[in-house]
Length: 398
Picture 1: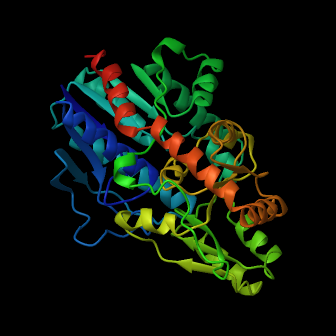
Picture 2 (picture 1 turned 30 degrees about the horizontal axis):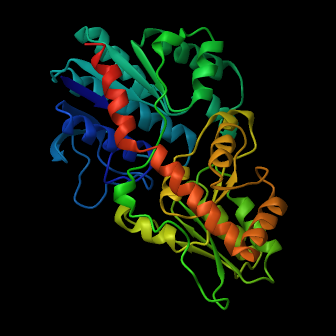
């Protein structure tokens, strides 16, 4: 079976869409499928080509048995809504043009933004092939949730396009059960939906099964690792750092994104000497960086839309054996609490986050129990198994 996968992010980019797509495609190749990925030249999050790449019309490489076709696109940093829309649309058009030259039996197109899904739908129509819509985010609802656009005429037009794409897909693969319920409530038939959640390859993470013992003189390290986007509400970390300024707690924030410069300025104005910012790191460095934390914060803004998401950081943090401090309600909170892998705090509430940090700092036995719960969570969401499940549903379309 020949699979064509459209994703505007792919390694060496290390954001969630890139890592999930790579992990699944690699497993599908191992299972005997021929997989071609059409993606951009890697440029996330700064909007400039990564070292060793140029933004040329078409270039090919093979990564872990997966053929990768990289196409030209307008590159924009992960900041500024209008520029990113041009980025998304340019990739969608380029991927349709490049896709016409490919031979495939089925096409998969992934969100979060659905212009890539539109490209998958167009190619499927022209080539008369089935197509799969992988729903990683409810877009455009998430645009409104972050405040990037107001709920108005433009959003209604995007919602209409969104529903048309759902109806045209031969299979919809959302990453949470809450997304599935949302789609069914909006009139999408449930028999065409297959939930395949995010997960983690535990073998790659070499989990230590818990937080390493440290002397009492060492600061209690609270970390955030990943994109500093508008959706994350990372100011809650800085507000909590201010509340804990006189205590032996150090905040380590690693990554890049639209909110980074503002967060750094905020910390400087507040003179937060217990907060350190680090540049983005390579994928191979992520496990060691995570395992240096006593706890990892995973926040999102306090909106109803985000009660339906499960941040992919949960699975990697759990696999690293690090207690989770979760500022997300709904589906994500139920998952973390079911496995006793972390402590939930009210989104955007620094007082609750500071209290949770104090609780962990004063109770090492609680940290160990949460780390053990995380290890169990990671085992139950083995990405290799999840990828094979998705492949079986795709095979049924051909």
